[in-house]
Length: 435
Ligand code: GLY
Image 1 (cartoon, rainbow, N blue to C red):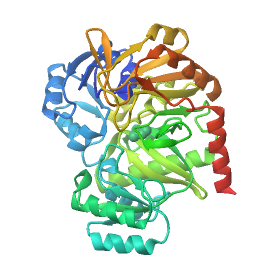
Image 2: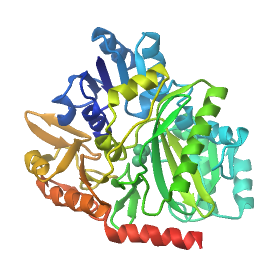
Image 3: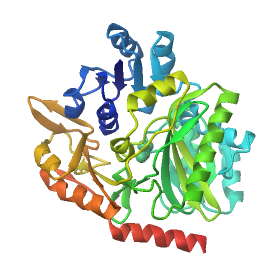
Image 4: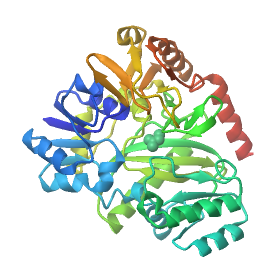
């Protein structure tokens, strides 16, 4: 069996590590030290669809696993499938669940899927402004397409008031931010965010343990929004503020979504990432991603007991069975260059003592770094994820935090991810919302 992983980051490093008993190939845009030592690789753009297809055909790849969303939006799966290659990732049409937020919200509305929220889609500046004036409560302004996590702005957080919301909405429409001349205005959800990822074979979904990411750059949930500074999961697959009933409701929302995508477009095959807000009334959908989460892939994949390649084959063949995960808690902390996310210092030498990290039970997943002449250099983005696994979140956090000392360079990380204080804050927040 020959497996190709497309993508360069820590999420893809975690995917590659999960591939056992298969010949592993990869396409990455720069030399990831973790992926390059376990795969036959080509350094080229993952968005060069013709190049990816040629590499896959030349190497007689059986299954391609697509890490990031950009090639999915461009139709990489359609290209590879036409060439007879099985794919873990949705087609361009099915990936609209992530790449077109208007499509996603309309799907919920048209198919009466639970977890829907108040929203409207506009392509006209005056109508948008009138709606914002009439709405009368805090709202969220979103470009319709992909923005690399930087497009969503919330009144009261990134936007001062309704006037700022109108200005941003006008900018989105006039300048076609994210490629569409459309904007989505949504109600602001109050609660705690969490992630559920699932394997999907077109009909059936097989869910993974829940996780919680930390998008803010600085401790105490302060500072600018990033791609995610770290995440944790618990040994029962739930989270300290997330009960079984709410988790099951989220999974049901994802299952209903997959049914709706099949009815409206075509079967969805691949990984589905549901980002939910646990609100007073239960979970509501914030957004979907058509891929593994980053960092959340690093929480779930190291715990997978079922053979990952068998699961990928089940996705391709449409006959997924269940997936078992080890009953352990995990904490992942991202090490990022100083100045990240606005002006991360690129080209700095990063010294990673992997043997000490592994000796002290930590795992390393390389992200946006580049290996040249046996040295590792930062880029302006996240550098590497460290993971601790334990019998409790506290144990996993201790392992993870301890091994951060073996990464040296012009970098920082959030020490509070997975700590008891932060988790207590989440539990208290949820109690306040529910009572
Ligand atoms: N954790 C955020 C993402 O994967 O997009």
